[in-house]
Image (cartoon, rainbow, N blue to C red; front, top):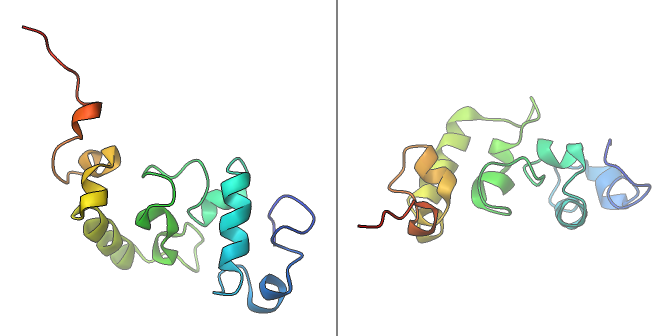
Length: 114
């Protein structure tokens, strides 16, 4: 376990026993990364500040999109992204437009004056 801090994640019994990818540990990882997005370990689990999609969105939270070699699953991650970007929430995420899904949200589109 390589998260910063002495007990927020690594000190939790659920994380020590089931690993940081376990369902029992997930709330501790989410809470830690919400409070400390600068922790580079959070990026590996999709909760850091380097996820290109909106924070806590499906692509940032999905285990299949996790950047750890044993967890990342390109096909499943692509499906998570496609499902998310095809949803109402995803239609408001500028990264979905960057990925080729729909149009950029109007608040991210430069306004031209006539």
